[in-house]
Amino acid sequence: MSEMTDKEKFLFDLQGFLVVKDFLTQEEVRALNEAFDANWDKQIDRSAAGGVGTALYL
Image 1 (spheres, rainbow, N blue to C red):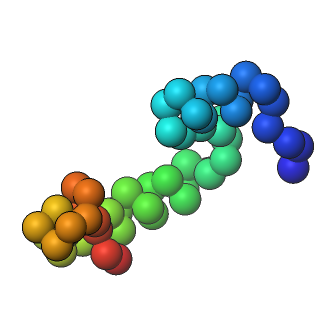
Image 2: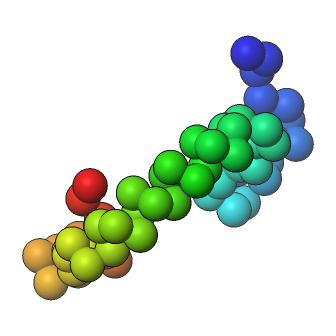
């Protein structure tokens, strides 16, 4: 794996995420989407407990 370029570091600092093309296969994305959809109702709101936003525990 190569190191992040200066542009990637800048974009990460600016946006808080990176786009890494072809990191997951289509099958892996499908499986992750299915797991997320199957557990959406288990999402809890952490903001009342001093957290930020919500968290989904799988």
